[in-house]
Image (cartoon, rainbow, N blue to C red):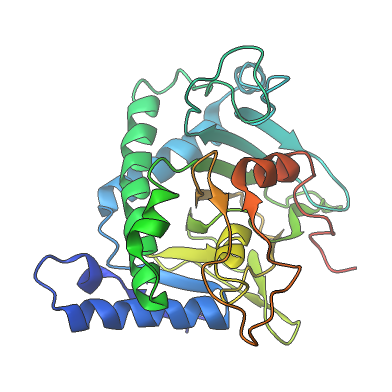
Length: 315
C-alpha cells in the first residue's frame, strides 16, 4: 500500500473532462500538497515507452561508461552544475550523478553558476535526442500541474504560468552503488528539501531506499509505483504559497546489494523569476519568513551548499 496519495491526473488534462472533473483533480493535488508535500501521479500522459527509454539510457550510462568517459563530462569551473559528479562521503552517503539543465539565454563565457553548456555522453547515438524529447514532455506536464494548483488555490493562472513559461528545469540521473563489500559504505543522499517548485521522480524498481519525513518526525519509505511519478513540493512552491504547501524533508538510504538508478526532473521557475507569496497571511499579519526571493539567487545558494546537510544513515 502506498504511503502517499495516488492521484489520477488524466481527468484534468483530458479535453473531454468537465470543469467539475478538472476541479476534483485540482483539489486532490491541493490536499496532498498541504498535508504531506508528496504524492504519486498517474495518468500523467508521458508514454510508458518514453519512461522505459530514458530509464534505460541512464542505467546504461552508469553501467557501461568508463571512468575516463565520465571524467570527460566532469563539472566545469564557473558553471559548476552541468555534467558528471561523484560523491564519496562517509557521513552523507555516496552516489554519482549526471546533470542537465535548461540553457540560460544570453549567457556567455565566463559562465556563472548554472549558466554553462550541457555536456552530453556520445554513446549511445540517441542519448541527446532521448533526453530532449523527455524534457519537452516533462516541461509541458509541469506547466499543466501548475495550472491545476492555481485552480485549487483560486490564483490567477496567468500569474503562475508567467513565472514558468521558460522554466529552469534540471534533469538529474543518479546512481547509488550496490552494497556488496563486507564493510558496507554509506550510499545515499542526506536529509534535504528540494529548492524548486515540483520534482517528478522516475526510478528503477528498487524499494526501501527513498525515505520521507512525516509530520511526526518519523521516516517512511516512498517506494516506486510503475507508471507513476513520485512528486514532491520544493521550497519555491512553499514560498509561493506562504508555507501552505509543504516542502518536505527526504533522504536516500540505499542498502541493497544492487545499484539504484534514480531520474528526478526538477521543474523550477524561470531563471530570473521573482517568487513572492500569492496567498494572504492566515491571521492578516505579514510575517518575516515569506518575503519573496529571486529564483536565481535561491538556486546559486543551493548549488554552493553540499546536498544533504545531515547524514543519509541514522546515527
